[in-house]
Length: 249
Length: 313
Image (cartoon, rainbow over the protein chains, first blue to last red):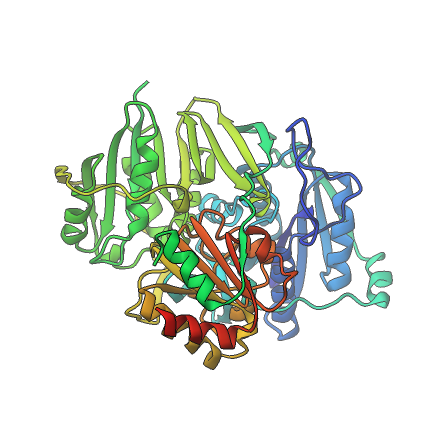
């Protein structure tokens, strides 16, 4: 079956104002709204559109994380994923561990495409897609803003520092999404009801034969240094004067 | 402990990207740093000569192969890994080039990657921003095996010139994949300074209203010798191309002067400009969050103010 595997991560919602815990052990997550990582939502949307165009028959969504992550999997099912895989894991899941777990799922599911977000907005690591592609020994096309499938290949337009780069990769391949790939759909209430009946399978890292190890220990979290409060000027002339005084013009 | 660092050069085939000189400065923060820079290219001589001049570089290696005509992570990663054995640290810039490549290198080395290094505290201890820069995380590697890292270029000055490192050809015997093929790159050629290394940057937001509106900024930028950036909202609206986007998912920059025009200042945008020496904000909304970080703020109509500034220069 032509299948697309989409990886999602549960993260602190995009709109939440982040506060570092006083003891420096992390950021405050108690009572904070959690969501699907926005880039992963774009990944899922792209997979659903490919399926709707007839380019795939099944969209499987997977996550690695604690029990609560199933909420985000249900949201993904409500968006339109056909089934969900939850790999139970507690604590910090580093990119290498996440990629190893995804590789096990890839071996099991044999997808023609794996689509992931380019980075998670919590740890901002931006590694999992590339690591998975390397371990799988398959192509990667990161920062995708356009994706076309044709005859066993994918033509991917990538947002790179110089502009837009186009690559052609053989399938199967790993794609990571950038912001402008698509705009994810809203979930409708009837779909939320339907999603409750869709299959959600729970696995564990150890059952997959993946060791939960942390290669980078957290020493501490700190709030970023604050900029000093600036001045207000009244018009363009005052602005130009102020810049001249600072030696900037 | 001597740190032996391998840095992967970023270039376009003829010109070295300024991000590499910033990686060299980052690497110099490691104790007793011995720095090797590798240039993967179809023909490496021109770029290697530029690398050799960077102060602090001990040696330049070239990996020449026709498959290196365009930087493809899947092609470069196995070559980098093939020469990585003697090194303690393998670094690249945290640009789209480096982010794409280094994680693939880390995976093949079975090494942890520290993304967006903003400070080095010891050979195993690094500081990096997380949560769009709303927290700074210090991490510690075990000290066994290598550490791979991407360097947040805005956190480091470019290494000075004046060096004369020896250049050596390296040869590796690795099978290079053909499953990934370069098709094209569309880059808007501009005479303006490069956004990532410019001393002055003028950025516009959605309030510019159109691509036409951005011409106001181009005109001011040209008078100031500045690069032009844009907020995500302006890029999404089609007023400016994606390579101009500044912010968490665009470019992270550290100019001497940053002028934000018609940009409200979403946290994701502020992440990209935190290291600017002086931030100027021009916005008609006096409550816009950009004013919380601006050193100089001016509330008013940008369509009047910007031409007036230009006249006053």
